[in-house]
Image 1 (tube, protein in one colour):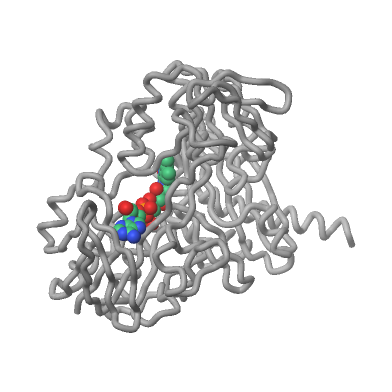
Image 2 (cartoon, protein in one colour):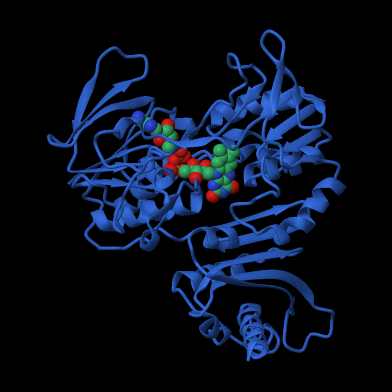
Length: 456
Ligand SMILES: Cc1cc2nc3c(=O)[nH]c(=O)nc-3n(C[C@H](O)[C@H](O)[C@H](O)COP(=O)(O)OP(=O)(O)OC[C@H]3O[C@@H](n4cnc5c(N)ncnc54)[C@H](O)[C@@H]3O)c2cc1C
């Protein structure tokens, strides 16, 4: 069997490697328009560079030699131009070559990901208004950043907030501009990020929320200032990380798409065409019961979809949960973790959502005498059924495993009373009596009971 994968980034590489591990007899061909040195680049390489984890951006890529050893065939600097599903062929062109060639496939995997869109400045593109994802774009951005002093970041999502954190520590004048009331609005309810917003101001970042109509003041080829609601700020560089879009031009008219150009797949990641799978950023978070879909570029999803597609192609039928989403970050001295739906999103979907926010102690063991460390946790759940919809964590310490446990609770999905008694291991010198997730759910039950009691 020949499997052709278009796109050799996180999802495509994951599918290719796992396919070869599952069945070395499968012929796997990976096609990507990028240079081989740039494949599988980690898009926040700039942050890793400023934080000192890497010395140059080249270190934030997948090691190509390992992949070649597995027998995967690569066509790099090659762009796929057309898909012919009836004949099961793709048409491609090596960059710089005049000739177009075709390739037959038995199974096709679409892993074309997403790309940044240029921020509209009113006129032509400006040299100092940029966006980045690939290594080449990141390298250019890094060079411009090193020359710039006054940097405006337009967008208060993870990318913008993390970049603001590293740039302020590197002595830049940083303006973080967002149209929303609060940072990270897709992942956290407002009360969960207020302490972080205070820390952003305290660190010296000029944070400008609720800025809708940012105007660009330009000379011939550069933006010199940004006009906000109440002030005009001089800038050397504008970074606009919020405008990622799915790369779907290639398959418009070939497979069924949502109206935002993300791909419609079933739980086995199959598209509307037989033998064509889609994985990675082009596949949105999908809550099928409500027919809701959200474009959400995340490496965690891309990798696992790659593996699920490989399993399905290799004949091990594996459903992938399209609704799952978990994110985390460490910014301005806080660990932030979130899975599932925020309160506003749940309400928007017509769910009667109840919530509880509480500070919970985290003890290293059941005998601990030291004052506990506290985590601020929020649980969103459906009224009546108690089905857990979302959990958000804010802490000074990283709580990666706890966040993963929360994600599993959602995946099942558990109800409040089930999570209150969900099994976590116990040893007096290693764990507290209950995991704090047990306590979070139990506290929510107590709160529900108190409210019901009042009503009686
Ligand atoms: C600045 C930044 C920071 C980020 N940080 C994080 C983070 O910390 N954590 C996280 O989970 N996510 C992060 N993301 C999101 C993450 O980068 C994406 O979710 C991830 O790259 C998706 O991988 P993918 O395989 O779906 O596609 P992509 O990485 O977008 O790759 C798609 C590949 O397909 C190729 N391709 C497209 N069309 C064609 C064609 N016609 N022919 C040939 N090749 C083609 C492209 O060249 C590309 O290599 C970040 C994104 C950005 C922009």
